[in-house]
Image (tube, rainbow, N blue to C red):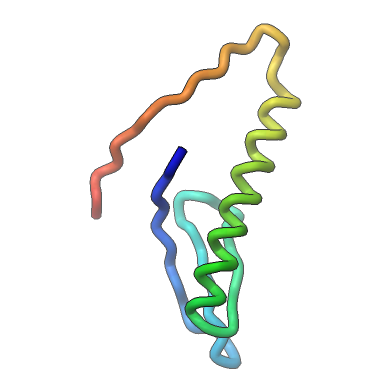
Length: 76
């Protein structure tokens, strides 16, 4: 399943690039350059979403119903 997220890249001290995903609080990383920051934020999002799913599965009751929904978000 593919999801698209907005990423904000900001130059921080010593020329490092910070990457954040506004739709996913906690998805924050950095890189020495833009390419490294891109790779790192992709991995951060993947790991964060995996952790969210695992935690939700642990917290769900035995009779919980799991479904997938699709949501259209207007481009800004």
